Image (cartoon, rainbow, N blue to C red):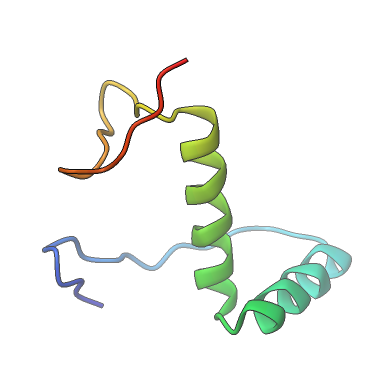
Length: 69
């Protein structure tokens, strides 16, 4: 899948219990996303919560509002 910003998504896999997958499916359905989309969305939200100014390798998008502590 090619993204409009030039980044291509890669197929990945993960291990999870049946209960974890059921929870993921419920969250994805609630938000109207695929399971992959739900995982990515949750990871992005948590990443920017933990690192609002980004990290050395991952910088906020140009023009993004950045919170400082």
